[in-house]
Length: 153
Image 1: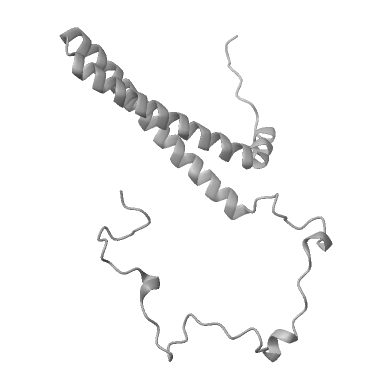
Image 2: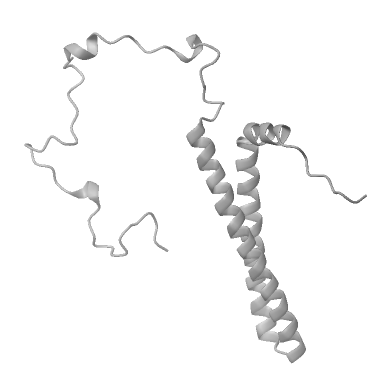
């Protein structure tokens, strides 16, 4: 499994392991005792308690967070649908293997189905946590949109 684009070679040096010469100042900051004149003239930051009520605090997700949450809900939902398809395929294969009397195949297929069910449960948990954390916008959208009502009663 490729984790965050890491090289599969153990001997590969990471980006942080390279040496920086004394002349290379790309990643360096000035010392804390050095004060620049332009930084002293700036106004102090406003503490969170003194902010106006309309400002977005940490409890209110901003638009970028909401878009990212929507994206992950779509990705996780798609993965859940794929898992459901695989579970259906495993159930069909289990029935076929049972009919053929292949006990080893039934055992292996059931094990694979249990793993898929665990993955589905994990995805359900992630989806539930995402939806509960970003529920305000979803509830507001549901309140604004008309509910789907069946035409036939």
